[in-house]
Amino acid sequence: MTTSDKAPNPFNTYAQEGGGCRVRLSGEEVRAPAGFALRAASVHEVVQRLAAKDATLWGDAATEEAAIRLGWLDLPTSSRELLPRIAEVRAGLQADGLDHVVLAGMGGSSLAPEVICRNAGVELTVLDTTDANQIRRTLADRLDRTVVVVASKSGGTIETDSHRRAYIQAFRDAGLSDEQIAARFVVVTDPGSPLEEIATEGNYRALFLADPNVGGRYSALSAFGLVPSGLAGADVAKLLDEAAELRPALEQLGDNPGLLLGAALSGAATHSREKLVLANTDPALEGFGDWVEQLIAESSGKEGKGLLPVIVEGIDAPGWADIGPDAVRATLGDVDGSEIRITSGPLGAQFLLWEWATAFMGWGLHTSPFDQPNVTESKDNTARLLESATDGVLDVPAPLFTDGPIEVHGDQALLGEAKSLVDALELILRQVQPTGYLALMAYLDRFADADIARLRPALARLLAGPQVTFGWGPRFLHSTGQFHKGGQPVGVFLQITGAVEEDLPIPGRPYSFATLQMAQALGDLGALQSRNRPALRLHLTDRKAGIATLLAAFGA
Image (cartoon, rainbow, N blue to C red):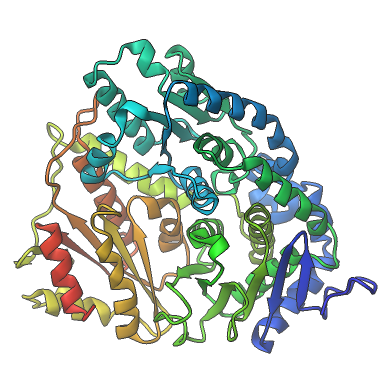
């Protein structure tokens, strides 16, 4: 029941609708904390202050960062100025026969465009990996028709810079002149970044300067989300229309689905709920959970707080029905048994809905929803390892032992007398506590090695209670990687790396993609081990055989 025909009363209303979005809460264990959060929000005028871009909303420590991160509130209107230029550049690309759009971006620069294009039914090749096998295959795909969108807020993201260099070399090897190569690149970055300078000096086909007051994970409706999607053929004007229709509802107390969703997330996170198990039953939002995962994990997982998003394969998947008392269920779709139901809402509105709710959750947790301190930490670890490499070769520790196609790496004190893969797996799984979680982190090819993702439901079924997450490296470093190190210290980590069939050099760098990928894996592993998080690394000397061995070990 909503309050559309009465005076707004957000305190006793657990179904709120506006702008095409509807949020419903069920179960007193979720409604009661949400009601408390709604009352607190009213007292502190959170809705009014967020709408007015009050940077003090999240406390003194967060004010400086928040002051330069609230531009996302205006994107449904301000991003319209991008539309004519996107259309113009797309027309030029089509005239030149360049119809294969490749996006080189990480985190917020890639997750939103991927879901936008998937739901629009248009093709966009997203390159957000450092896996040499995957990159080599992508470079060979329709190179004669390829335009590369390089998207990086800072302009110095190591993955996207490496992709740009690899494509320049591929175009050069194909016989293109410097002028022709420049016409194959479109750049999206913040003003004043190193990438702006590269694009300007190189006379790239197009340079889009994004709003610097929008953080990466809130950038779905900015140039980072709209440019690659629009160039690929998605109707990005429609996304802005959808978000604009919702915006008035987000600035009022009654019939405010964003307020209710934010209250549910905040209430859960402050009342012993540490995990948000999300299943999608709405085909119109396919892949949306991956974007939500990054937004929630990176925004809330710090200072030992937050909600860990657990994206499950469906409502019949392990981890959904056997949920523990430390988690709350949410669905994109109206599902019985779901405590938070987002039962409707077009994609453009959904982006704004979740961004608003996440900002509200940050207020409720007394943390900044706009920084990501531990993402930077892993980047720094990677840089140190690369600097210490000798002739581009990392000093990789020897395995404790090898079992078939799998090398086992880990702390001897943790693994004890384990001499087999099964022994090691049993020991690491024993570390997972009833209210903890197991994170699977695969530094592999997310298409050719996609079967490795079947480990998530297999392990969730085996553990029967503790949640299991899955992430592709280094993609997850810009998402749940923040929560792993900054959230509740209850995680156990299983990292999977693999031998590269044919390495790929990074032009102008003293290291290859295989070296970069391994440095990222070891850098993140080191960050976890420095916090005494139980962690095991399995290295597949033969990827196909190694994946088959792991699936067999867990009955998958």
